[in-house]
Image (cartoon, rainbow, N blue to C red):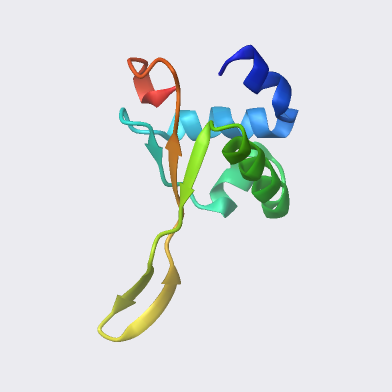
Length: 96
């Protein structure tokens, strides 16, 4: 995270970013649910939503909505979002 990006986001957004980085694969993809992010960061889901919006606005994260799960015609709802983490240095472990 650059200094200007760090100054553009709240402390909570910084914590959420760090958590997503800890969950990310080597190619910078993370798929924790909003509930899991909230539990691990110690905040509400609505706070997570605001923090993710900040991360998207600063270009640190792209959120991809994933399709609903349907098995044998029964709808089980949406899966977790896919978060793509964007960084200048792609050589670091976990994409961050």
